[in-house]
Image (cartoon, rainbow, N blue to C red; front, top):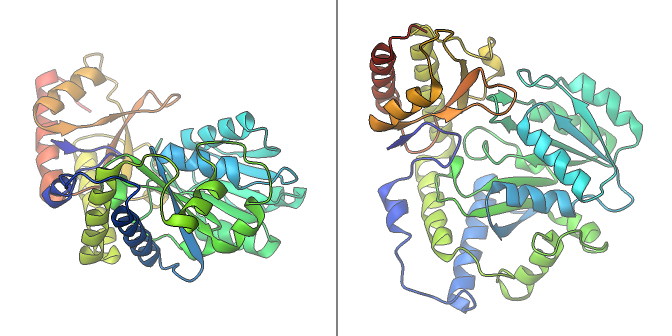
Length: 361
């Protein structure tokens, strides 16, 4: 099955094989050594070995986001949230639940937020800013470098949801105070492990105010790792072995190689879909991440997305529905262990399915 989704993504056979290991107790030193190796490899991959640490949580990417939202902002802090997609909405929901003093920069979902709009709002005494790098609700890519510069100029701590961008497109992790990532998606591991890259000096702050969450407390998890190299709660042991293999394969491909492969996939997908008559949601391709693209559904009365999905599923391809508010679109990811030939095979299958449905895009 070719997964044309924003994650989970297709994995290599060697990553799948890495799931099958001898049974081991997660409290053994041997497993702590595995975690230490994974932590070191990820920091090296992110090029932040001297400035950051990485904290693991058993859970999805949203678990990592929850950990950062629950832990990064002190009771006296004030958070500015950028919302131009469903994952920004999710961060806002977390801020509300945790009682964090916050305000929101609302922006159209089909556009990257403009840095000048954020600059004006940051004059309101904010201590932290949070943004989603790649909004997989639409495929929009927000201007991370420009926003990081604004935060640095104003001494505002920078929180970034890079769940669906880290290891898929360039991310300057060194410019970020709290960055969330996931074991699947562009790292091409298995789902089940969330992680937060934290600038080490931030632990001097977050360890000194009461935690808002028991399970996803960053400070408590970091202290446990420092004490004995372990996670506080039972981890997804096999997923961690698979991620270690996936990170090894990322180094072998190189980040630049992966960036280029994904971009080639995206270019082939966008050109092919346009050639078939589909209209991209984002008219300006410079606004797209190169990891996922959204397309308007055909207006034909004969078109039915569920049938479109099911016929493609039968042909070996999984496509993704729209998020709430964008039901007139659907999404196609191009990450994971796939290449242009798989994209071309999908495009052929899609043309055949549209003909079978009697629909012209």
